[in-house]
Image: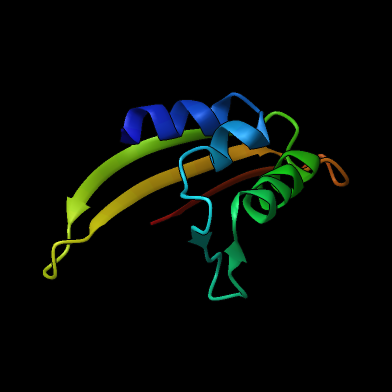
Length: 92
């Protein structure tokens, strides 16, 4: 599943990313407000693609937390659309 999720991000198709979430699923980026529902998640992914049109996501690891939650560890890289600067960032 984690490999397919990575492929969805690399497809540059926001709907592919959103398809991994339940209709009322949510994602929170950098402790911000949650994007709730597939439409909002599609919009969130579209924002990433607008900023990084050559976005590539790498799955670095999948871990199990102490309370049995999956942790997806990733690296994102691409050139920022406005500055042209290469960005490489990681997270989970």
